[in-house]
Length: 140
Image (cartoon, rainbow, N blue to C red; front, side, top):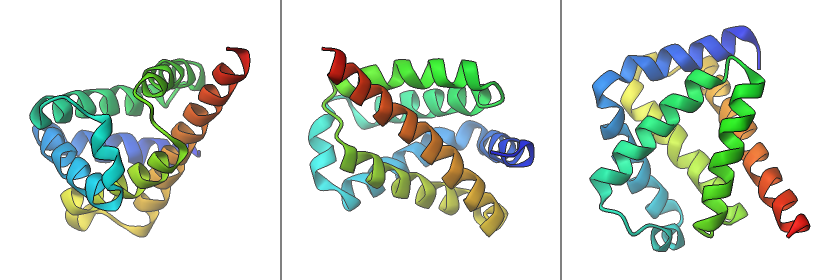
């Protein structure tokens, strides 16, 4: 990712402010529509899930300025997702759900350039998470 892409991801997420959990609720709605099997992975009340998701996404977005910090955070997140039984297909569905929710909540600020930056950021995180999971499974 370029420094400009990183900054646009960080700035756009920060612009959601207190509405980030509302975007997260929309993310889950979209995720469960795209991949109904994903709903079985969650047992927490939706509002709690949304708060946690928004906070975790905020931390990842802030960490992206330092690959070492970002990759450590994503590695920890991957371990939790492995324990939740998240599969490869869920990452694809989650990416589309996230981009859709961000587009809806950022409105006119969502441009093709911003979408490309978010897609790169998500793909980087998802690839690191899937790689971490695969590495952990090989060493188990």
